[in-house]
Length: 352
Image (tube, one colour):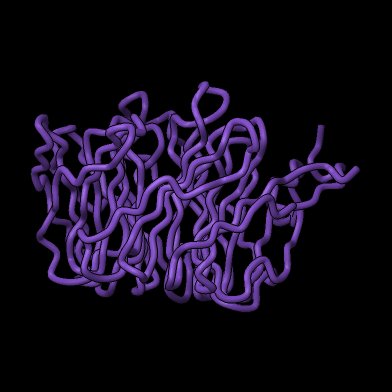
């Protein structure tokens, strides 16, 4: 059924309190869900130098803080990301390091600390196989780390190309292609043609390619990986597409092209966007609002278009830094993190 025809609302399920400073990022554990017979787990990281691990009870369905990861980072923890196996959590900090934590069941152990960036690490991302980790920093560089056995991580590449602070790194969901976005208003695509780990910048998406005119804050992909959404300080979301089947069949690099621009929906910087597994795009911004978009399914005169599905004003009391859909489709949960120190869990459901 067409989502646009349903009367949907975004309901606040729970407010998760505990951080004592702004919350920068949230990350759902990819393998923890009721569907997998385990309890859903969410990580959040903050300007209070800590990471909180939240777990949903199977009976009450309420969320509680299971553990607090502290005394490792000495400054703001800006980004957190679970490995595909759900066993490891990577946390990137303004102290210049990325910590790797192992979930031992009843506790988390910091098994490795990755050092190399000259200053604040802004983002961390695992590739789909869990064999590479990418980090980026205010030092304008992107690092790729190879995940070796025995809790060892080896720097496989240092990628220089951005001319300013790099805000986010994100691996493609089905291929070892890395994307980075920056204060220099561009998105760069990094790829190793021969699978030898020699990553090169194969494309730069900037204003000349219908890209953003100001800082690009975030990148997300749809489930199949043939579309990408980016968001910016220019108050727009942009949808991009590529013929990834060409790359999967070994025919070389398939370039990304601009599909459409969503503008007029937020009136402050859009800090976060995330594409759900069932094709709903969420955005969170400095106007304290969350917006949801879906493919209109019928192209306008200008080509493909996306419709506003829902808007949630005053979702938080301050800037929204992160919106993330849960990986499981069955209940359409969205987590959000804000400068107000709160993490909120939302459910998208049909109004009765």
